[in-house]
Image (cartoon, rainbow, N blue to C red; front, side, top):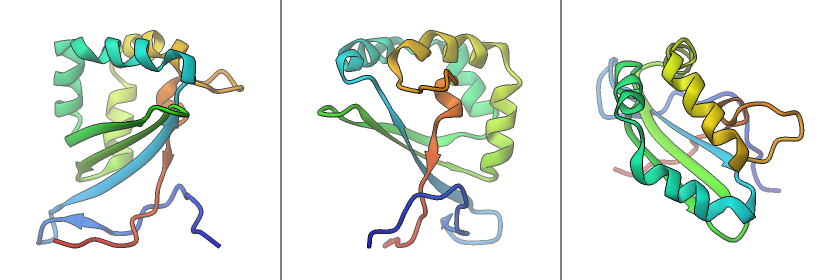
Length: 127
């Protein structure tokens, strides 16, 4: 049986030392028919959104897409993911960005995209 995603992340660190950033990976689900629109929206991410992500501690942040079914995989490194998410949640620019992205995502409960991400368990790393 394959491992199932969980909301707990192991103590996986990017780099050496006690203050090294943690690697975080998560998934989200796009509406397959909206993939092209979602990609177009990311061609010009607002500079203030990028600044807010940096200020909140999101580093080496990347998004990947499986086009066939709209699976989005996100990767970032941060000192404290819960704190980084909370800091973003406190910004007006994030509220506006999430509102503008909501139409591209599937969520029967009507939550915003950043509320639907599912963290994955980091179980292997090779430097």
